[in-house]
Length: 199
Ligand SMILES: [Zn+2]
Ligand SMILES: [Zn+2]
Image (cartoon, rainbow, N blue to C red):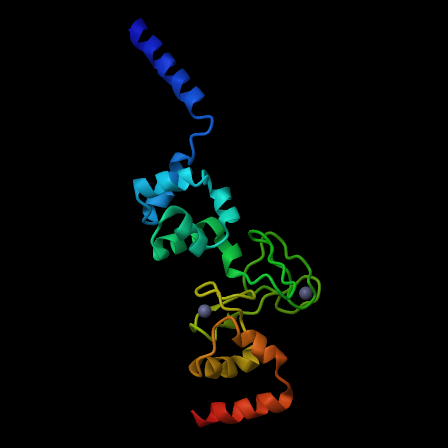
């Protein structure tokens, strides 16, 4: 009995000293496996110098990751979207600041909404709906905020939803449609409306 206990202590000790730079935590490893990375793939990641979720942020994108560790493109894609979380879905231009976690700012006046805020509530500061429910021109999902939670498209103004759908039909990339609508002047939009009505 005493012997067994001693052995256990020794084993514990060995483990502790050996895991100074052991790489991924058990959880990270399980997640990577669930994303389709093989045990060998994880080995290659560690060899490339990646040993935790944070390191993927340095890698930056799926293509680089695939090259570094010889992962399949779709696997690398899944790993990066996990590692980068919402960050990957947000274009970092136009000065859009996305708040971490559950902080909701009123789209009209910018006031921070209380902790018990629910989608559809009115802003305590200006009385308007702090976060109107938007429909996505790309995938048709609805939700609050600036970006679609289904496909990460930036929402276009509700009044221009049909124009967004039309531009999608005409083959414009998802990321360019909101920007294009913002840049259009009224005459160009009128032309687009005329085309939208023909469908
Ligand atoms: Zn407000
Ligand atoms: Zn969408």
